[in-house]
Length: 177
Image 1: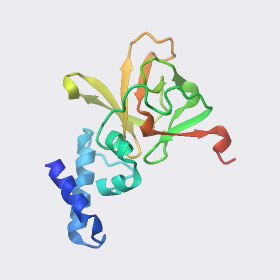
Image 2: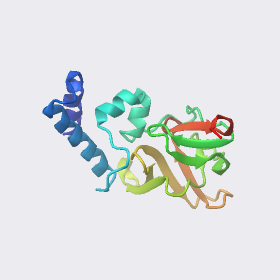
Image 3: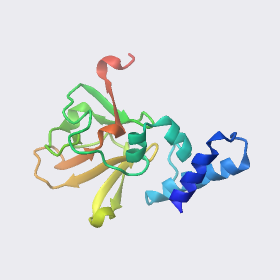
Image 4: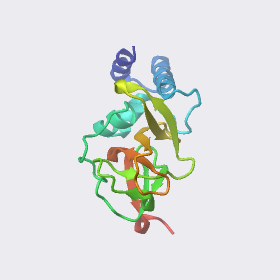
């Protein structure tokens, strides 16, 4: 049903926001996304799937909104080592400090902890395995997965395996004083 609804919503993109059919479609897709992450709590940033499609690149939309995964080793931030903060690419919420980033060799950016309150975690049973999914606590965008107990010599022994397209780096020199 979601595929059918999203196709219908895309066909409605030329309608004005005042059209009641468009408003109903917006409500349907926003509610689906919230329930898709096993919670009935709304996220502070709530947009229709059409609005997300317009704002995000096709790859960002696939990963952040449809829980996709970028190819290992292909991400912009996999070997990046700037000093600053990694924000959510969808809503610009600060998620990770650069000093929590480490090289795990997994092909995706890895962090040992998020900024407190920045992410929500859920059990993910997709793909025939059980993992811990993490999403942005502000917009519900899919970030990646958390793995524990892998033996990395980090303060938490956690690996937050994050898709680069889910992130936007803001260097310390870019911040307003």
